[in-house]
Image (cartoon, rainbow, N blue to C red; front, side):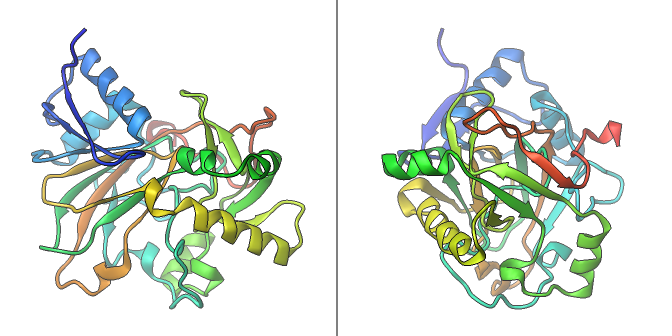
Length: 305
């Protein structure tokens, strides 16, 4: 059967542009199925020239899954509890200067501090600077496959502790810490999770949230995680997207990390996007063992909050 959408890959490992779809309108089930298939294959997909508002953004998201509250820690916009404002000066960015800036600083999968991190994230660009303010994604399935056989066998057996903290444990501002303390989320996840739809092995090492490897001494853990983080963000696993007004990016939060380069803080004017996340599952490791909640409840669909 001929495809009803256009899919144009951007790199070997990750990223594709989708055309022939109007996200402001209800989509036929077969179109939704093709979009999901493209997402699972390319990990992040991009739509251009979409004329959608909060309501149509939310309506489209519901065709892919169950929207969560905008952000489990940092809340939501007024009137739309399922939508989170991704603005340059949002509370999530209000921490002190990091003690160290490394190639992996700022990279993350959304809210891996939760026992069930979101499955899918849908980000809509509304106000963008004329240049700068790009977003990058990296394919953690390709990163896993890029490890040596020996290291894959070792990392398959490990678990790590994820929680919300400002980069490199630098103290946050009062606004940041108030949000973080309001809903503490701490979870232990496998360092390699099995993707629930594709069966692929994912190097599940979200640098912003993953703080230590279970069973390792602090120094061992830090050196080992830095090795994995540096590997995970190698250029050949990544795609960089230059935003324009009306763009929509959808990524498989179970299989990628993403990062907004800090040049956005040097750009004049704001950078305003809006994000919806969809309810995710509890990660399961290679040995069949699920993640473990240390503190905090699962992220549920908004209607169940």
